[in-house]
Image 1 (cartoon, one colour):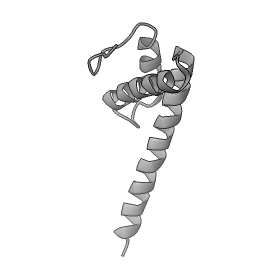
Image 2 (cartoon, helix red, strand yellow):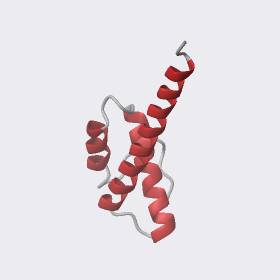
Image 3 (cartoon, helix red, strand yellow):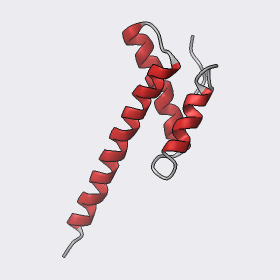
Length: 83
């Protein structure tokens, strides 16, 4: 069943809220919400189910990777602008 972007399914609101709090200052809430939705969909596709615990674990790993990529881009920009 398709759900509109930004809608929350029962059981995932707390996952989203927890990750938004955890990644405050790192990722905007909308990105965290999209990551949770993507983690839910990928979990359902791969395993046939998507428990909130599994979705939270997948989303957290993705958010950490995105934070690492962003930090590396900032570092590279700084290095490129160093005289």
